[in-house]
Image 1 (cartoon, rainbow, N blue to C red):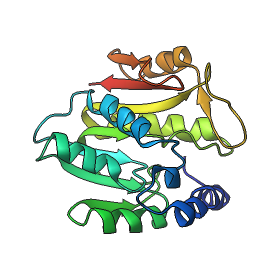
Image 2: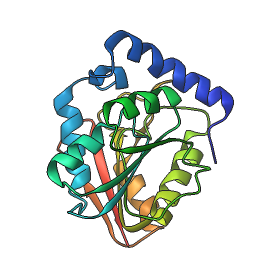
Image 3: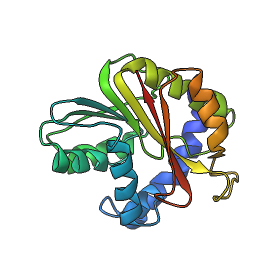
Length: 201
């Protein structure tokens, strides 16, 4: 499954105006409400088992700020960021010239494998058939990972589900992920409206 051209137009129409208003240095340009929340999500994602010397694929990388977090904690991590939005990738390449970024729809991307595949916020923008597309992403993320996958989602118990934001039930996600691997770990309570899922090989 992949994004249609209409899906892309809707996605770009949501994010690109915010980039123009707030600029690349402000997390609000990515529709995050605050910097500390972004960093907390990164911390929980990295606790899947990131360590020195591993390779990381960042699906839906935005401005590539997860790269900065990982490099500050683990100096020799090998990183590739993917995003479907070329404007995001343009900004990411300017911010982090030493990192690698590609404009790609992960649904049709043919690269890999990587030790770890991470996604922060990439499964939260609602499009038609979002469940088919994003659940397909999760399956492909697991297929691409040598060691583990970590991704966060908006919690349907605490976050509004509307025309823009897709939310998920943690128990349902746990059951779906058990169909991919018996080694599933759920992380909750770090932020009220989020939960994170770890999938291990």
